[in-house]
Every structure is written in structure tokens, then in C-alpha cells.
Image 1 (tube, one colour):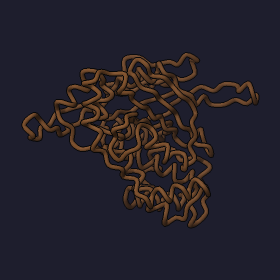
Image 2: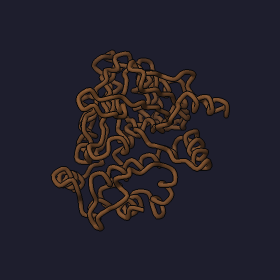
Image 3: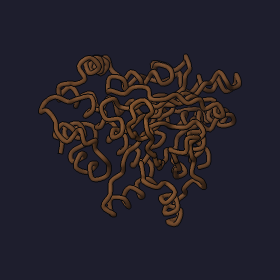
Image 4: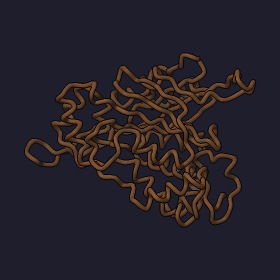
Length: 339
């Protein structure tokens, strides 16, 4: 056990979290050793990934059941990427608009832009971020931005009504630690342990309880923005990298779990993805009388991906295809619309 990871995950998830999570999911081989008292950006990125994965399993019973099966069979989840949704809009309260709320975190952690994907059918743009130090082993982030200006004026007003109350969980001290991390690629252990729980809180809903009328106006034009209204910037999904996504899909279907009907295959043929439908969650809204009402809405979900290798023409090396595909992503996003 990497003692830095142990301390970080205890700070973010409670005692014994590291021992519990390393039984569930991969840890980058490069993190087998550590320097006592000094946390590298790779260690902090790995700890953040593990904490967010843990949080997603708490919200996604279908994903928890699948992960438990993997562990019972002696395996671990190879955490490939996590996804989140943002809104590129000038009226986001105290939050920076769109993905800027997260690039200010990801870049100091050692992530760099790995690809941009126009998602025109759902009026969004997706961008993937891979880790510089261990791109094949530390989970990527897929961050999407919704563009309200491409929708009706009524929709835009509903977006403003929902997100303008957003608060910023990133404190000035946390921003200072991130600046130090970006400069030095490391932090003292005590500072990293104080920073990680703040970073975890950034991946949540930051705006107030939405009005039901606004939610319905958003849902009429964009299932994705309606999802943001209730779930905010929480992990939309987490993804297990598997050897054969077709076989996994067949096995999960045989178990009666709500998996997508078909596997999405990239234009290159090297990236294949499918997913469970989103698990429903109960959320509070404010009705026209100012009273609180509850509705069941789509929550987060669990995805599967198979990545093939290719020969890099520039270097001649065989590499894992860490790219994404706009068509795949658009198909996968429908998991929160179908629930």
C-alpha cells in the first residue's frame, strides 16, 4: 500500500478507504512506491479518481452490483475514465463557466487536453483530459459543456434560473495549493490531505434546489441540461476498461441488468463502448406554490469500454488508443435520457 494514498483516501473517504478501494479498482503501477511526506500530482490525481469512483458507486446500485461481481471473481475494475457535464454560460453564479470550473483543477493535477469532440446533435462539446505521468493507468476525465445559446430564449432563461445560484466550493486556500502543485508537481502531505476533500466537493451540484417549472422547460429541449439541473457537476458516469465489451454486455444482459441494446463502435473501430441505463434517483424541486415536491429522475450510470492498440506512425510504437468518438459519446449520453 502506498502510504500517501492511504492518508489521502482516509482524509477524503474515511478510515480504511484505501484498503477497501484497492480491492475494487486499479492503481497505476508507477504509484507502487512513494516518498514519505510528499504527495506527487499523480498520487493526488489517483486519490481523486478513487474517491469519485467510490461516490459514484454509492449513487449507482447497478454499478455497485457489477463491481461486487468483479471482486467476487477475483478481479478489479480498470477505471478508464469518469465523465461530468458543465454549462458554458455567463450566469453560473460564483462558478467559472463551463469546463473552466474543472480545468483549473485538472491541469495542476497533471492532466492535459487529449481530444476535442463536437457533440452537435445534443448541442454540447466534449473534451478528454489524460494524465501526463501515467496516461494509460490513471483514469481520464471526459468533460462536456452544454451551449445554451443554441437553444430557445425560454430555455436560456431556465438555465439562468437554475445555475445562477451556484456557489464555488474551491476556497482561496485550495486555489493556492493548486498553484503550488502546478509549479512543483507535488505538495506536502498535510496540504494534499486538506486539499483532496475540497476537490471532491467540486464534483457535485453547486446550485440551489431547482424549480419544477424550470426543470420541465429544460427537459423539453435537452435531457442533458435537465440532468445538470438535478445532479450538477457530479460524475455522470464511471467506466470499466474491459477486454471484450461485447461479452460483458451479453453477460450483464443475461443477468437481467438494464444494459444498452447495442455497443457503440468508433469510426476507427478501436474504441467500443456500452453502458447501463442510469439508475433513477429521487430529487427535490420547488413547485409553483413554493412548496417542495419530489420526483424520480435519471441519476448517474456505469459504462464499459474496450480500447484496442495501434501503431503510432510517428514513433513506430504500439500504443493503446486513448481517444474517444463523438458518435459513441452521443449514444452513451442517452443513458440518462432513457431512464
